Length: 408
Image (cartoon, rainbow, N blue to C red):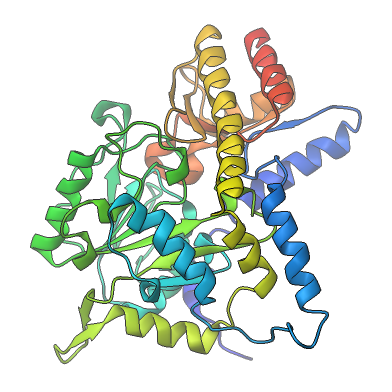
């Protein structure tokens, strides 16, 4: 018999969102005439903007002609897209990021999961709690997480609670971790860190030789001028942070798949002999071996998002979802429910009624309101007693969901 990676056997049998999908599928099969409003899995509903679609079509035509055909592309991504990202997402905001420090991928989920390939399995890891499950599960797969404990935590991970009591801003670690995962604006709580709050984390990482893995997938939803859209707005961060971004929630690329990771060229780690090693070079080596790059048509579509018209269309999509978020916050308050987030993020973090668990509230909303959320406990122990709703439905579906919640 072939031996397997025992770390995988420690994981729960199914991924959180797969479990939700099965519950919804079973309910739908038993109630085929029921209209279900889905606000659980963070998939978008607005179509990809016209500029990107036109670029996608043109790129597909390029592949049909010998003179413009593209086969294997550069593993790091085409220069035209990396140049557009460097100029529009960073340099235009006063951040000195080179196109050579940008790696195009098929999405932030892949990169946040795969980045552990270049980091030692002996690294100590700190995660905010609640947290996007991929951060925990991929460290379990790699062997960094230790053993599952009765309280829902893993023995080798340091949990940094994000609760209403601390304004969903975690306290600094006490266990001297090597790796710290931060996602702000946050998934799932929908809350954000101010510039001064994020500076505290950068200062900590610099003083403790820690690496921050900063998931900035929702930066385009930031409205508060005091909330940074990139960790590289903070002085010193290029010596201690890797940033992950996605086109999924900003431009509707959940089905097209495209994102990118920024690893500053001066960011260093050490090998087992104490030698200084470039994390940028290690990631390039990893990508060159395991990844053949995002497709040419998809990268052309992403490039089009940075045209003046593309930027306007993306802004319209984000404004559409943020209108939903405002509707949800107002409607939930009128329904007597306490909710957080939804101001610099498309996520709403709802406190369950007293005495009702996350999964019980999920089941209640599904069976009595036919609305799908995500139970907070699926994001970690501190998520118990909450449920996440997304603003990615249509205006009409959002309004109807609010009316159903009011009746409940």
